[in-house]
Figure 1 (cartoon, rainbow, N blue to C red):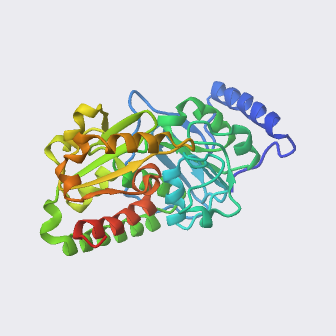
Figure 2 (figure 1 turned 90 degrees about the horizontal axis):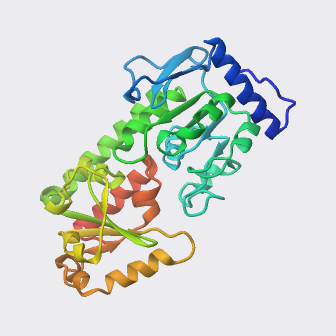
Figure 3 (figure 1 turned 90 degrees about the vertical axis):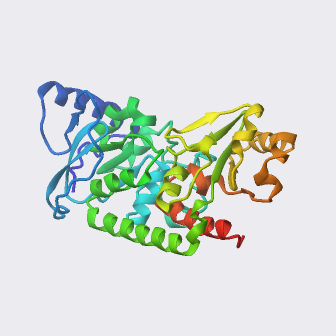
Length: 339
């Protein structure tokens, strides 16, 4: 596996020394295994290559949001800095040595994956990864995202070869396959997505003509409310499933933060809404305030008892392959009226 230099250094000293070394190597134009080649004017496409999975002891190069990274052999000590990516690793049968905690509680993992992460060290949050804790784990690969961690990419790269996806929103499958390639599990990743496609086909067959159901998506958060559009985790799932969106929400962008005057835009044949909490109850208070408004109560979807509150973690925040499969299972029941 990867070489382990400077074993005797402590956490803070290790990070400082490694940062000094990466600056020296960069200045000398080093081209050794683990080299991080910067992107040019635009991030490299995150489309996996068509080449076969490298042998366990071979080097391979991954193109990603920050450029190119060369990895030697199948990584054994992976640190994951996205909650979406944690699901990817678990689906591939890879247990990380460290991973970021949940958004709702950065000191621990989401409940639905926690049993599979026993013994895994929490290394901060997506927005604030703990570099000292990461270095102390002596990883041979670090996986993260440009959207939240671009500023610490060079520090992470000084610790171990580092691969970044662009961002977590939108089509989760591209991020899934990039990480699968990074951990030398391309074939296993393709099998997971093959199973996903079978699940999608089975959903379409069961739902039948109800695929025309127009699905509205709303999120309550502390101090703000959003209508979610197509460039979201749930939007990508619904696109795969062939479900329709209300005309006002059928937009190829992320979301709009809305005022109460825009509640009528939340209407649809069915609505899924979820509430993000950080421990102070403010998200739930805002949800209660809005759902008591006459504009809300006069929505056809509400009057028809087709507005369903679902789990924010599963349906939105975590954003990975395990959650996606859970969403499809639950969505089927709601669309068919079995819930």
